[in-house]
Image 1 (cartoon, rainbow, N blue to C red):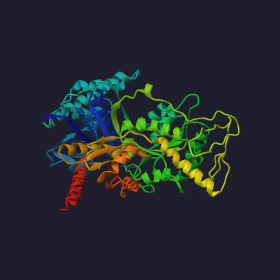
Image 2: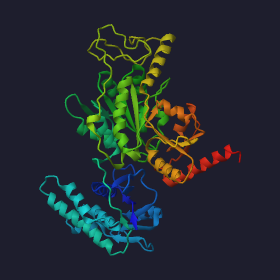
Image 3: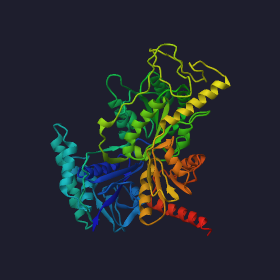
Image 4: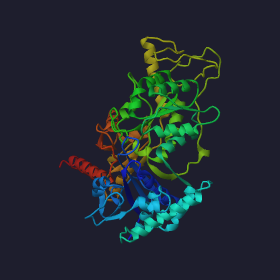
Length: 571
């Protein structure tokens, strides 16, 4: 039996190589032309605690981590107990026989991960033993593995050859040992490499790269899961003349620092998670009223309070769109794939410069830690777009009128005051009702400068449509493709731009009998926002800390569409 994809789950304790194994398998597969996508979930302590990572390898492009597990790699007894029920009946369970013994499960085969690794002289090669065993189960050629190891460990160091030798030996041992079991899944179909260059990276890495490509000048941040890796990336890579990256002591310091940088004419960004974003509320209000360009990235996790620091959720939308007191509605871009992480960061910086104010870029834990192959971006096509800068003479009133006006840069002509009080044309504090009306309408009117026409649509003639947002895009799109193939009358819409929504998209949505919104929160936040804009929207929610399963979405969308059709028919 030839397979077009397979799903492997690695489960154990933090520090056992669970994540390393999944990412190594994904890298080995993509290097020869397969597609790969991983999903990781782990506890919030530094070391230990139940951890699992899922890798999906496929001939065709991948949209979700996969519902059914073909292979479970159990590093300990607890991992087997917790996850064996999700392995399909014809699947395989590889367990670490150095840690425990498994009886009564015909799918299981014991592999002494650590013992085999030590026999190669490389105690850290246990994950390579596992990769070799997995390759045998899907009949993946040995040369794929050897090419992967050679490329990964050829670094120009004196010990490279020995590391390559021991890792290849470890993979061979894993392959040879499991061949004795008689277990197999079937041959994985040959890869179909794309005719364009690809790179493989995590969502947070893609976002950071996008920000650098988009001309980021200034980054400060405070370490907070799952956003910390963006800070680390910036500290290592945002270097050179006019560039600055720094770790600060609090989220309040982060927002005030980028307010200062934006005021001084720099492209400025920070990244945080829900608890940190809450602390930035007052600073974001200042950025809104003073019209200072900056970008805040919210890598969502389970909440409220400390909540679920290392689980995924989409429950910050209301907080991101309306973070400050008073009349405030922030521009929001929510990315849904690793590729969108890259381009979303560029767009967020562009938006902040275009309308001269704060922009919120939303992502989430499932994307932050996801490893995926994407088309290599063409950096020659990326523009470093900057704000309109005032170049006239002194006496300029920056806040005059209801439209965007060029921004003076301190030390140059047209200097102005930017404080948190309501102000008049030149920035002086005022409590006059006429001025508050003028400035409120000016601030909201500028949002029209951010309206885009970019959105996805399919089967637009149907009266019911699915419209996910953020990281729920992949599972929802896979579910939609299945629904469409089975004849369920439903359409598809999607956009990164949640505020402002593309006007043409909003116009189409208002004509639908129902817009179904899959989202990972309890309240159905985006569906509520759509209803406030005149769209008949209903949420399909989940708040487990994990992504949607495709089969669950298919079932629930089918139930909703059938109920709407029966009601329309008067049944």
